[in-house]
Image 1 (cartoon, rainbow, N blue to C red):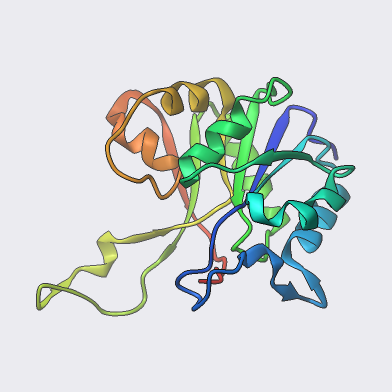
Image 2 (cartoon, rainbow, N blue to C red; image 1 turned 90 degrees about the vertical axis):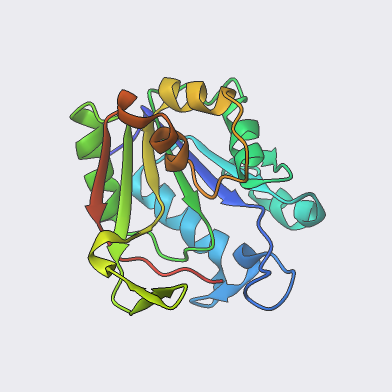
Length: 201
């Protein structure tokens, strides 16, 4: 199976501030190799041919060795800036775009196939999530966890719509791309589906 109609954007420019240091999480060793190496190997095996790797400037020497496997794009100050930089590349002109944070070391192919299925059903934004199993308290009051979702990546989008929402200016720091579609309200069809994934933070 090939994914010729897909841009696949990997975000590897973040700092591990919650992990307890300022190192790049994608450089952490997992399964005896770096996270980025595992992910690129899986994507290549599954048939993705147009991969963009967004990296932090200070890690350029490390990421240069992947220039034959992915288009390398310098990240921005914030996550949304990094995505904009990737989308501004002329070669990122495929019909669909999948965005994944490399802080999540495991991508399940089944998740990718679900995203594709819903994009083919004309959803403009497809978002995996997991349920909240722990008790959550805000201002000494327990929140109904049945109303909460933990948003995950990879996320899928119709590329032209993703570019549209990224061109608009929003106040505040965006933590993921699906937030741009939620800000737009009912203008877009958003599909959520339950999925499990772990994150290094």
